[in-house]
Amino acid sequence: MGADKATLMIAGKPLWMRQLEILRSMVPDRLLISARTRPIWTPEDIDVVLDEPPSRGPLSGLVAALQVIKTTHLLALAIDMTEMTTDHLMMLWNLASENMGVAPLSGKFYEPLCAIYPATATLSAGRALASGQLSLQTLVDDLVGQNSVRTFPVGETYKFLYRNRNSPEDMN
Image (cartoon, rainbow, N blue to C red; front, side, top):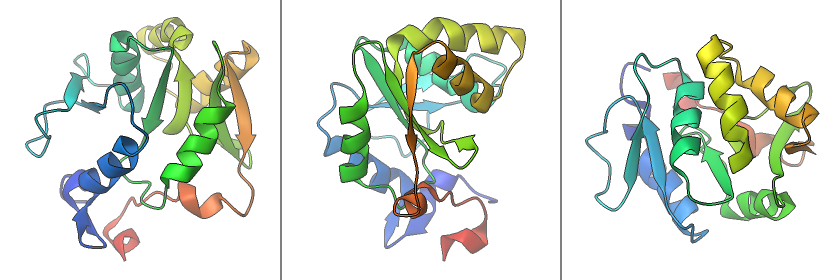
């Protein structure tokens, strides 16, 4: 993107502000931002969880966040899923249960950066990171196989919510 994706504007707001508003409306116990270093735009009331160096992509952030939560579940939301809504996240949240998370499944692929992970996933995620198995697809598939995560089929009705903005052209 050529810039910190979180600071890019959409509908008059930086992406970070939009995503935090959605998450705050869910009234979570705690909000975390996963990053390599503390972003300059981070509000003071938000905790930043730093990836263990060297960062190995999104799995590093997921492991770091899972290791610090004190709750039963972690909801992960990518900064660039700009169409996501509070209502949809609440629907996913309501599908989670004790020791069971939820991973949206779009076709053959999981949406691991808009998923709910049970705290019990910490061990599997940490092992994957330590072994160099960095694919979140593989991790979620393993968690589904362990009955730690159930899938939510993303039909055409919801597909637009999971659109990632990965290039400057996507910002329009």
